[in-house]
Image (tube, helix red, strand yellow):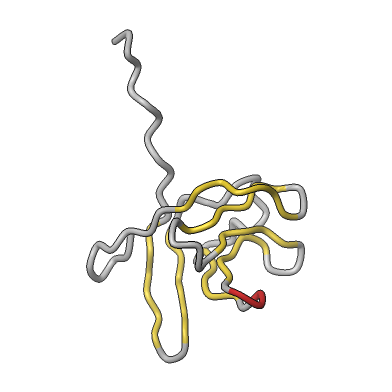
Length: 92
């Protein structure tokens, strides 16, 4: 969720990269992946890195649920990466 205006992007798991889960944004334009060189990051076509977590959670088994900074050209935004809430227990 983007801090400045609440815009939300949704990612879905789509395979693996370097032995860790890979996530593709629902519109297909951005990937959230891990690599040995960059740790967790988002990238667009051609492997251009467009976002990183602000804290040093680069080696977690999954993308860290923390603040991320995106950058493209002269623009930069802060996002909260949030994991989806598990489905409610139908037995409850």
